[in-house]
Image 1 (cartoon, helix red, strand yellow):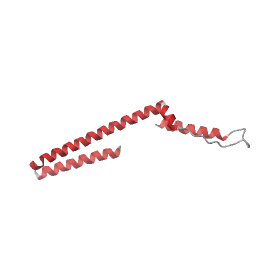
Image 2 (cartoon, rainbow, N blue to C red):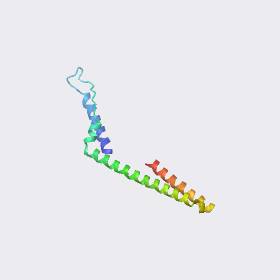
Image 3 (cartoon, rainbow, N blue to C red):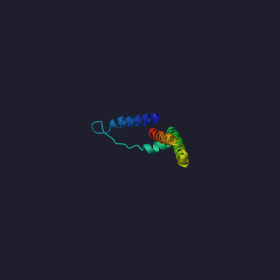
Image 4 (cartoon, rainbow, N blue to C red):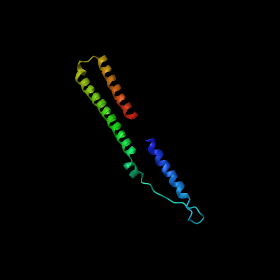
Amino acid sequence: MKQIVLTLSMLAFVGAAWAQETPDAPGGLTQRVAYVNTEAILEQWPPAIKAQGELEDMVDEWNARLDSMTLALQTEYADVQKRMNMMTEEQLQQAQQDLVEMQQEAERFRQSK
């Protein structure tokens, strides 16, 4: 990713410097404007393609982990609902605390990614 930014920055700098000096213009200097289609460059540049693939793999992995955490939370909640009438007050409070901790952990994970 750093390579991409560095390369594009260098291209922009060199292009700007090159456009500044034109001997055939009156006074020897002129200013030119150029547009660079960075999207087209990034779509065809192999390191950018590889980096995009790696990012997509990481996002897929994070989503799978978050889905797993959500499913575990839902399963535990359903289990607590089924056993609620057979639990003591202390067990119920502990189960509720566990559910809150699971939910907070999932939320922290979501916010960290």
